[in-house]
Length: 364
Ligand code: NAD
Image (cartoon, rainbow, N blue to C red; front, side):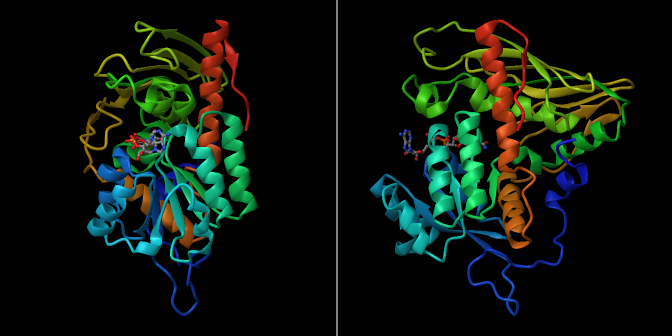
């Protein structure tokens, strides 16, 4: 198994005695309990989800921003009390190296910019939390991991579902074989994409289309439910709008065979709304979530009845978990290697579409 279940579930569990490490101003007499974050890229996700979530975190604090839009500087400074010396742009970003107030940079830029800002962030001595998908390709993922290792900084990917109770419960159900040995999983996530001029439809900035953006949630679900890496993949793409999707994929269906024999049937699309679920089938019953991958409103059921938990702020949980990893000097369960494994599977999916062949997945 690539993800240890107790480690995974433990991401939201109680703190062990915290030895501070790599966090500014730490001292044995006054152990830090908070890690200071700067958001890099102040677009929709940073504005509407991450900054509000940072008002709820216990161990992560918003103290800085990096933006290419000067008009946002005052707006964010006023709204969140960001000090002038903690506001950067993409050009002077490297000067973060001189700023001891900021511990973590959270990269919330278009996918194609993740590598550059993760590498520069690590070189500036900062831990890095990077949004999903980790990068445009596995080579870039490896460069990001190397840069963080070289700088002795931690790297985590924004896989928020790992910190969500319904998902965590489903992992328990799968790994404990509550409904018998798992035989099959179906998973899908997609939505109808709007503005034809947005970066998500540009190959260099997005790295791919629906697959890279939301298909990774279905891929992740199969990987964390089984705790296995896909051995072989077959995939097909359907394109109905050649102009809008000239540079990226529109709809992809794929099948993955896990080493244990579990079959995974997945789909993703930018062409229509509605698919947002996974179902897992064991020898003695099934369980699943629908909707599964939203920021809230997650609902589930199993052969034994409804799966009901309070919906949490997944971003707050994700950032607190990363902060605790830094405070306790632990590797994140959603590490760079975890992001790399997704990209290796995505590359096999694209390769299978290109060749029409069953494709083996590359190894870390
Ligand atoms: P967005 O378009 O709303 O924001 C992107 C930000 O990057 C903007 O502030 C923009 O000004 C800036 N930017 C800098 N250079 C740019 C360029 N060359 N082209 C376009 N924008 C540029 O995007 P978003 O929805 O906030 O997504 C940002 C990242 O977050 C992506 O990697 C995306 O996959 C990820 N994301 C994750 C989730 C999640 O649930 N974890 C949800 C949405 C987005």
